[in-house]
Image (cartoon, rainbow, N blue to C red; front, side):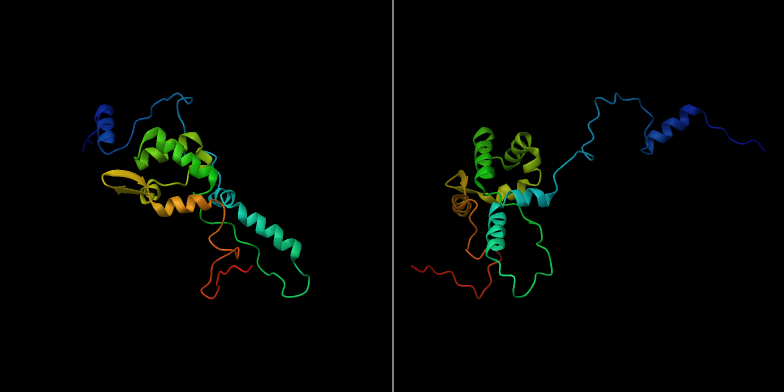
Length: 171
């Protein structure tokens, strides 16, 4: 019994129809592999956006009394990026003035200017900062208030704000 032998042309057509690709020679200088690009870890970017953490750590180290409960666990690195720092917010406003109110365009411009810092800024985050008032886009009042605070945290306790902590000013 004779076996059916396919020609090479039929096999290569079948391979391309199944989604397999033929071997192609590509100039290696043209290929840019973005998967292996050196990027800063998210925690490094988040720490850089929160300088108050470093300041409070230094103040606590100076005033720490050797007696008392010892620290068991080391500090966790920052998880979330504070986009309302003066450095980041001024770049965001400059990008908005350059490209308009399109939130995807704002993020693309920021990544073009400083990819290492703005690589974790997503378009839907910027979309939440923009409100339409009377048919015109503008920054939301809450975002502008956070940008005015800048690096200052929302309270004076230096960490998470618990329900039993009361902020009061004493003169």
